[in-house]
Length: 210
Image (tube, rainbow, N blue to C red; front, top):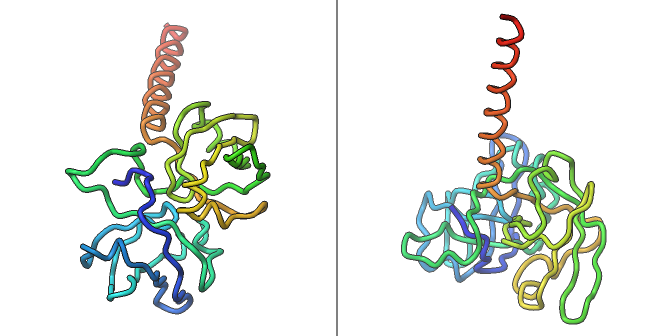
């Protein structure tokens, strides 16, 4: 489990695709302080497992499915990436509950300066939009953010200077693809309510057949 508080901005050192091995190697320093084989690290919000590590980076195996269904497929050597280690049991819960299992991607529709902040508008599909509420939480490339505005097919977040400096958002342009993860609490509530609605519908059908 993660919290969406980015610990370090890493850099892609190598991407191996094709054949039997699909692997990405990330250059970093801070998160290597206590890294072990098998540890979980969120890379742009995608939970990956450490399979190799050295003094200046780590490697993780990536499935074709992950490359194709996330923004990891658009990374190249030198690309900056958001990094976060799994939350320690005695750590502070600075963001919100983030699983590292993204729901899909979105595309940056607009970027607008507003004083010391910057507004990002993200366009995405209806399935993800259904789980987004104003003033609720959203994870963009692993960053825990608050939704400031919601429309039919897009939403907006306002980014402070610190977040722009310390995360990949400071490197993003209009048209770039980002990973999105809805608030997991909201997803569970939606699932349970859907089951209740289905049960009520079945009960009504049974009554009508009596």
